[in-house]
Length: 378
Image (cartoon, helix red, strand yellow):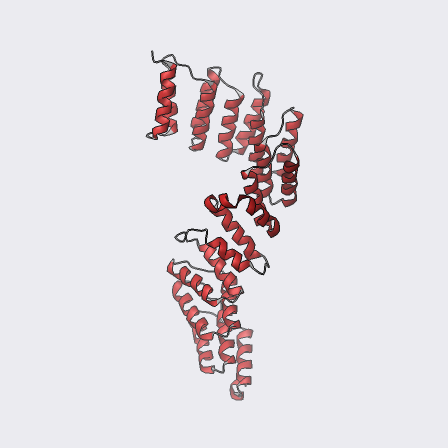
């Protein structure tokens, strides 16, 4: 018979080599249990957790049932299966299992159980259920721990309930359970989404090193917060954050955001760099607001030839060329009294099946009137 200590040493050796998956290690352990080395409830709980993380919910349930049949069902195995259900999006099964646990004569919910429920409700934005579960912790003579508060804050962030998020955070600062780095990362995301730049910057300073090295998604969230703001230094702050994102990491939505930002600020060179990147990566932009933002920038800078070249590239690249772009070109040509080129725009509109509207004729009327071509006006 293989000694228990030898089995566990062998299991640890396999874990460290990384030659097989954790599920294979667990099944190897189960096989040895048949030769007189009994499994423990914690090992079953570990197996259920591993199965859940590998998206194998059926296996997780199978392991849970096996533990129950061997009278090894504990709060830990319940929690592991609830966690597997939560991780895989089976919220209803998670709640049903919680009810089974409440009815169990031997096992009872632990703080881990309630943390899983809070996280489950938070992900679904069922805030009332989440808060009711939090109150139930006190009724059960249990004490909330760090995970409890972090899950609660995560639920508020998901539901965009910024006041509740901050109230919970302040209660942690004043209470016995202090915020950790996970708390600060959640709060940072909440402040970024809510546009609270002052609080966002304060929180960022607390976790700056970690965020810069490991949380590029949070960096993007902060960039979006600055973009939506009226901060007079937003371009400089965005550029500083942009340096933290790997240069080879191209994201279409982020590039379009920069395109709009630079257009709004009339930073032509940077705007055209973003435009060129979009064309190089075959990004097709079909949003009218983006096109209007770009054309308005060209209009303010009176760069009709550059706008004309941009429209041609749009047409070739499959971008959405709206009627407003053609109207913008017409107005700019008219302002420079380049009526022939203005009239060419009408042909471009016809080739693109863009019908003339009252605004089109109004632009023509004003252009011909200003240039003294009364015969065309009539």
